[in-house]
Image 1 (tube, helix red, strand yellow):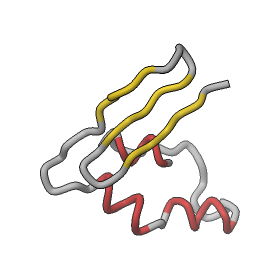
Image 2 (cartoon, one colour):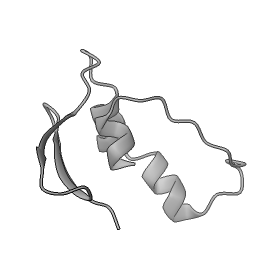
Image 3 (cartoon, rainbow, N blue to C red):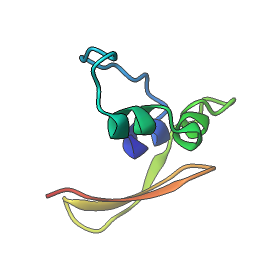
Length: 70
């Protein structure tokens, strides 16, 4: 969700929202993540540092995300 919100992308789910778990619902309704995604300027985050092919840093005006892919 953090990566979705920082990239200002639409969220598309393939799940019956009536049956999702409570923890998934809490993530989807997280006001901070939604606020980052709904930035009035529509600004996307941008990669500012690439350590390797699997480690990089993404910066947004409101949020910074450190990503490690495994």
